[in-house]
Structure formats: C-alpha cells, structure tokens
Picture (tube, rainbow, N blue to C red):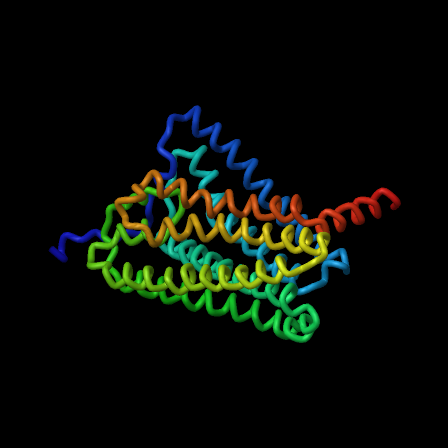
Length: 310
C-alpha cells in the first residue's frame, strides 16, 4: 500500500461551502469584523501606550492580550477572506503547517495570559497593600515572556508530532484555515498519539487554567463581599466582570472544540466554533473592556480631548 501513496505539496481549504451570493455577503461581514478587530485592539494598545495612568500591570497584560488577538485573527482571517472571493483555494503544505503552529502558539499564550490577569486581579483586591511588590514590573515581564515561550514550545511539540506523519491525501481540509484536528485528517497513518497529546495539552492549558481562574475569583468574590464601600464593590465588579466575560468566551469555545466527544461537534459546527475564537472573540475583547472599564473610557476621552486642543 505504501507504493500507492501520493505525497501532498498543497492543500485545498474548503471553507464555507455556500452559493456565490452568500460568499460575497460573508466576505463583507467578516471583513467588517476583521477591521473592527484590528481597530479595537489597536485603540486599546494605543491608549495603553499614550496614557501614563494605564501603565499598570493590569493594562500591561491587557496590551499583551490585544497583541495576541490581532495576531490570532491575522493568522487565519485574511486567507479566509481571499478564499471567499477566489475559486483557487489552495495553500502550500509548509505555510499550512506554519499557520497551525502560529494558531496554537497564540491560543496557548492567550490561555496563560488570562490566568495571569486573574492572578493580578486577585492580588489587587485581596492583597492591595502588597500589590506593587508582588506584581512588580519584573514579575510582569517574566510572566509575559514565560507565557510566550512555553506556548511556542508546546505548539512546536504538536507540529513536530504532525511532521512525523506521512500525508498522502485527501488534499482537502474542510475548514477555513489549517486547524490542527483538520490537518490530522490528511494523514495516512495512526494519529492516536497526536490525539492523546492534544487532549493532554487541552487539560494542561484549558482545564488547568480555568480551575486557577475560578479559584482566584472565588477568593476575589469573598473579598468583594467583605468590602463595606459600595463604590469599591462596583469598581471591583466592573473590572472583574470584564475579565470573566473574556475567560468565558475563549475557554468555553475552546473546551467544546477540543475536549467534547467528536460526535458532539460535526465539521460544520467545528467551523462555527473556529470562527468564534479566531474572529469573534478577538473582536469582542476590546469592546468588552472599553464598554465596561471606566479607566479605558477615561483614557479615550483624555486622548480625544488632547487631539481637539491641538
């Protein structure tokens, strides 16, 4: 049987298989969402850089999240948009694997950054007098660098396990980008080791972080309820609810995708889930923070006021 194998050099991303009129509608809609993603996260980054009041650990990690969201969306959405208006939907196999590596790196980094953000809120609310010592700039920098490095190494493990497999077709990926589970379907060999590593990694970077986030917020909630100041409670709830919304959106869709039994999410549903955490979630994150965070809105007003005065 080995002599009948045809080794693939390119793949076809089937994407959304709809009629041409709907394809152009989706192109316009997703282009708008992608523009909002770049604009929203770009504004968050700009405000954090320009306003010295936002030069705190919390907004440092928020800037990391904005960078991840821009990179995450830019890794898959431009190719998806091109495929919606093009009959040629092929992609070379090497860039496809590179796309898989970047997608995994950004996803793992976001998981870890969200955990660090929950710890930051825990220290700020439960240990305010020691906050500047515990969350020093050195600690913040090391945490961010460690998150990026560990995530890249874990993604490299996945890619290394993929590259050991023989790929002989079919040439079609029923996705709009080279998502790891879809890529594995092209292999003409046993992928149980890959599946096991994906599940183990999901436990490590999804279930573990969710448990840590929930533990942080149980203690935060207990501290907030002990606070006598109504204004202090409102401010704490506002900040923490924004972070919890982001955690729920990201981890919820990722856990359903990678930890639910395969029969629970057929391929078309898989595309919707992938679209959610590669486009919708990066677009919603800055909206959640800008609409629910008084400091971000205040920074935006100050920047706009300076522009008018100039």
